[in-house]
Figure 1 (cartoon, rainbow, N blue to C red):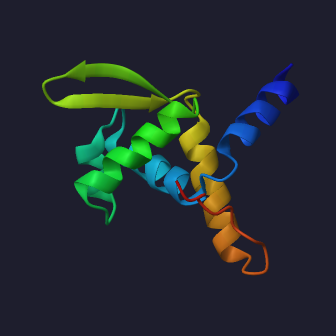
Figure 2 (tube, rainbow, N blue to C red):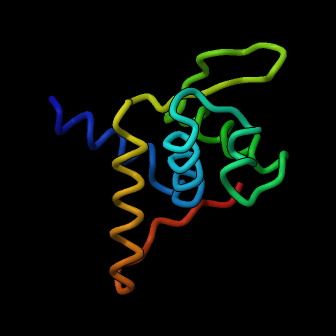
Length: 107
Protein backbone atom coordinates (compact mmCIF):
# COMPACT_ATOMS: atom_id res chain seq x y z
CA UNK A 1 0.00 0.00 0.00
CA UNK A 2 2.81 2.44 0.87
CA UNK A 3 4.57 1.61 -2.40
CA UNK A 4 1.44 2.48 -4.31
CA UNK A 5 1.18 5.84 -2.53
CA UNK A 6 4.80 6.63 -3.38
CA UNK A 7 4.20 5.76 -7.06
CA UNK A 8 1.13 8.01 -7.09
CA UNK A 9 3.10 10.92 -5.63
CA UNK A 10 5.94 10.38 -8.09
CA UNK A 11 3.55 10.38 -11.04
CA UNK A 12 1.91 13.60 -9.81
CA UNK A 13 5.32 15.19 -9.26
CA UNK A 14 6.66 14.35 -12.73
CA UNK A 15 7.31 17.51 -14.68
CA UNK A 16 7.14 19.87 -11.70
CA UNK A 17 10.87 19.91 -10.83
CA UNK A 18 11.54 23.62 -10.34
CA UNK A 19 8.06 24.30 -8.97
CA UNK A 20 8.47 21.54 -6.40
CA UNK A 21 11.92 22.78 -5.39
CA UNK A 22 10.50 26.26 -4.83
CA UNK A 23 7.45 25.02 -2.92
CA UNK A 24 9.52 22.65 -0.76
CA UNK A 25 11.98 25.44 0.11
CA UNK A 26 9.06 27.69 1.02
CA UNK A 27 7.30 25.05 3.11
CA UNK A 28 10.44 24.28 5.07
CA UNK A 29 11.30 27.97 5.53
CA UNK A 30 7.82 29.11 6.54
CA UNK A 31 7.34 26.21 8.98
CA UNK A 32 3.67 25.76 8.15
CA UNK A 33 1.04 26.76 5.64
CA UNK A 34 2.37 29.14 3.00
CA UNK A 35 1.06 31.45 0.32
CA UNK A 36 2.31 33.35 -2.69
CA UNK A 37 3.87 36.02 -0.47
CA UNK A 38 5.97 33.35 1.25
CA UNK A 39 7.04 31.92 -2.11
CA UNK A 40 8.26 35.40 -3.08
CA UNK A 41 10.00 35.91 0.27
CA UNK A 42 12.02 32.69 0.18
CA UNK A 43 12.67 32.48 -3.59
CA UNK A 44 13.61 34.82 -6.40
CA UNK A 45 10.19 34.96 -8.10
CA UNK A 46 7.61 37.67 -8.70
CA UNK A 47 4.01 37.62 -7.44
CA UNK A 48 2.56 36.30 -10.70
CA UNK A 49 4.97 33.40 -10.93
CA UNK A 50 4.51 32.56 -7.24
CA UNK A 51 0.74 32.31 -7.70
CA UNK A 52 1.06 30.21 -10.86
CA UNK A 53 3.43 27.76 -9.15
CA UNK A 54 1.04 27.23 -6.26
CA UNK A 55 -1.98 26.84 -8.51
CA UNK A 56 -0.23 24.31 -10.78
CA UNK A 57 0.83 22.20 -7.81
CA UNK A 58 -2.64 22.41 -6.25
CA UNK A 59 -4.32 21.57 -9.56
CA UNK A 60 -2.19 18.42 -9.79
CA UNK A 61 -3.01 17.39 -6.23
CA UNK A 62 0.38 18.03 -4.61
CA UNK A 63 -0.78 20.98 -2.48
CA UNK A 64 -4.06 21.58 -0.69
CA UNK A 65 -5.60 24.90 0.31
CA UNK A 66 -5.82 25.04 4.10
CA UNK A 67 -6.86 28.68 4.46
CA UNK A 68 -8.42 31.20 2.11
CA UNK A 69 -8.92 34.65 3.61
CA UNK A 70 -8.21 38.31 2.88
CA UNK A 71 -4.48 37.44 2.94
CA UNK A 72 -4.99 35.00 0.07
CA UNK A 73 -4.79 31.25 -0.18
CA UNK A 74 -2.43 29.29 2.05
CA UNK A 75 -1.30 25.82 1.08
CA UNK A 76 0.28 22.72 2.56
CA UNK A 77 1.74 19.66 0.86
CA UNK A 78 -0.57 16.65 0.79
CA UNK A 79 1.99 14.70 2.83
CA UNK A 80 3.79 16.30 5.77
CA UNK A 81 7.17 14.74 4.94
CA UNK A 82 7.08 15.58 1.24
CA UNK A 83 8.92 18.94 1.43
CA UNK A 84 11.83 17.36 3.32
CA UNK A 85 11.98 14.45 0.87
CA UNK A 86 11.94 16.83 -2.11
CA UNK A 87 14.63 19.03 -0.59
CA UNK A 88 16.91 16.06 0.09
CA UNK A 89 16.29 14.68 -3.40
CA UNK A 90 17.13 18.04 -5.01
CA UNK A 91 20.28 18.38 -2.93
CA UNK A 92 21.38 14.86 -3.90
CA UNK A 93 20.77 15.60 -7.58
CA UNK A 94 22.86 18.77 -7.30
CA UNK A 95 25.72 16.74 -5.80
CA UNK A 96 25.55 14.26 -8.69
CA UNK A 97 25.91 16.40 -11.79
CA UNK A 98 25.53 13.41 -14.14
CA UNK A 99 21.97 12.68 -12.96
CA UNK A 100 19.27 14.52 -14.89
CA UNK A 101 17.01 16.71 -12.76
CA UNK A 102 13.24 16.70 -13.30
CA UNK A 103 12.38 19.89 -15.17
CA UNK A 104 9.17 21.83 -14.93
CA UNK A 105 6.90 21.35 -17.89
CA UNK A 106 5.82 24.45 -19.76
CA UNK A 107 2.23 25.54 -19.29
